[in-house]
Image 1 (cartoon, rainbow, N blue to C red):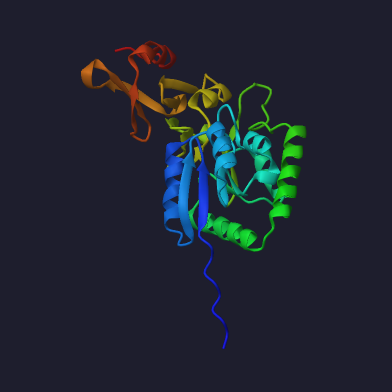
Image 2 (spheres, rainbow, N blue to C red):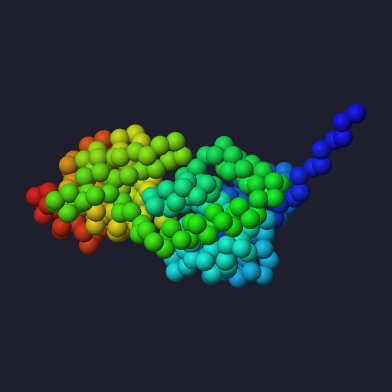
Length: 273
């Protein structure tokens, strides 16, 4: 008679991400995992370093791009030899993705699907059960050595005009290049920018101010602190509520126009009210 295999040891997990929604998403997914006993959160790299040194978990989901102290700095200060198993979480850091693949380290590329999360968690469980701590230390050390030597790749090569002609959008399945002329409008949403492209709404992890710098100001116009519009998609302006105005796009989308930007929009569109 075969002996029943022992149940997996409950995992203590640390989630490190500066975005509250990202932490909440991971916390929800971890809450569905039967072998996760405890989930702790850190909102920044410095807090993560203190926690990892004081109460090291079994597994850490570590955001790469954080202000002040990023994920690489966390590993560097804690030391690869003291790090638990790591699943990196990243958005559009092209160099980071290449580095993880080269060093056979697992990562989640935002935004990720539940199935991809479960796959990464299962890989981490197998690594922990296999006692591959020394292997992990070697991989993390190689990652840090490579990160120190190679600069991050730019978002895309700039043409002679100095402005991007396409933006890179990454998902778990593929890398997509979105021509800027296909973008109807851009919307800030937390630490992301939503690109409204017809019926699709891919997201990139950037600030709207950064995206605005990448795009030709003769083609894209900021009409609100959270909205950037393709000028060619604007149908007309019309009065809105409380003496404000709205920008109406060719597909009928109505977007709020900040009063302080009305004159600039009118000048560009050669309209008056």
